[in-house]
Image (cartoon, rainbow, N blue to C red; front, side, top):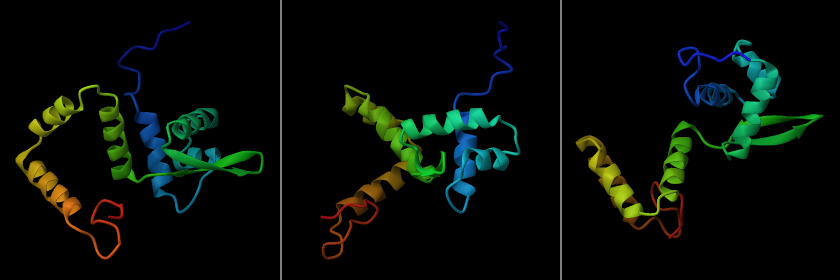
Length: 139
């Protein structure tokens, strides 16, 4: 059994990111073979299928039966996936206050102002019974 040198290994998450990028660029759901084609055949179809299954298990993609196989669609756009990952990491913390405090302390002043603005928008009352701005929730 041969060992792959660390220099030859792909960075963690690179394959998932490539598959997600192909799904985001698509006009609709894709089969594993279609994803493979979008990636110019750089990965074996079995590898693509495994990655798609793992992304489905993680809740990053949805799948629908298509004949004997599945088609896959992203559940979130890139920003939504990042937000979901951030929330997932926060949920793993026993001390949420410290985790959030450290996160905020490392923000640039521009990001801090943006976060303050977004929080102010979320606190503002939304239109009559409609979603609060930027929150996707109703009052």
